Image 1 (cartoon, rainbow, N blue to C red):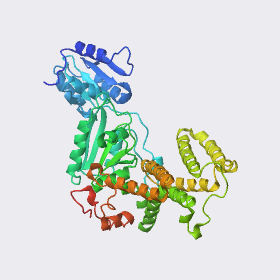
Image 2 (image 1 turned 30 degrees about the horizontal axis):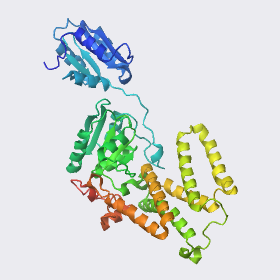
Image 3 (image 1 turned 90 degrees about the horizontal axis):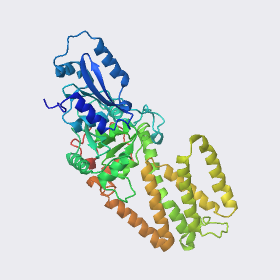
Image 4 (image 1 turned 120 degrees about the vertical axis):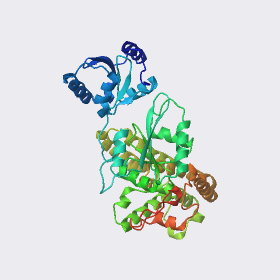
Length: 480
């Protein structure tokens, strides 16, 4: 048989004690137990298995009145099949199984088996903070890949749903599941993704899905996200039914969706929890927010520093309080200050966050104006820009828009009106040139598809929105 990996049980025990350095490793259990009258070596990681189930199984076997075991292989086949027993084909396969949470059994003759007793530590599914809805499901992904696949299976009860498992990196051996609908997925996109996964040669993905994104797309210094992250199973299920591919990384509570365009990043589940007209209004407001988040500050600066460009009806614009600090520097300090506030809010424990908010409001608000650090209009427009930025549902995209805003503001400050339009043209050209997975980032705006663009702007009723996006390349476009 192919699963006789060791000559004797004693040799196997010595090998694993040396491999795991048992004197310096407390969580790997390597011990000989007696299954009926059969000495058996068990190897497992105590924090990754359900010890109660294992103990109950072994206890029941001890109390069974059976004759002496003659064929140990047949005995294991008969009593452990209910726990996903699998023959270990190599020592490396056996080690990977143990480190993945399975229990390894080695008989006195050196035959090796793996049994399924996994129970990963983690939290229960709960609604994610960054994708809340007024009405809708309150479950969300956790750090357990098995639990996450179950949440998706619960919503798509189809035999066509696939979860293709891969182990990535040399030391981390991270479990990564590629999920797709077999009857819908674009084969070119799937093959491209699988090839990229096989090309990853690294020691670990400790930062989970974000590390994987950088490896897949060779992101380098691009500020924009090339995938959509979601912690909601309903959003992931909806994308899978459109023909997208989802990647689930063990230990990560978010799932990557691809291919996507910028308009995918601006969608939110709340649009589909309200009436179509309300969803359309919310969608349009969100598109307006991304535009004003980018251009409001640079445009205001351009108008107040060039009186010849300021219409008479907008003569009220401009700083009224004299200040020794240049206007451009005021904007930069205030904008960066808002970013520091965001960082402080992330790192501040919840009991202290209220006090931190009061302190920031008093310091950056009225006192900063009274001492002449900022003019009141600078604080106003910085706050409005921040509100527009916070209105974007995708965190990664909102940070990218802020980077582009600073670049456009700097270009406007250096070169005036020409700098504003040249900076805007460069940013737009950059967005047009992006094609992750050979999918245009601004589709259906560039290239322009009128019907598809209408469906992006307007949230049609579900009964009428029966076509999958053309850019995904799904095998079947009709949904109804």
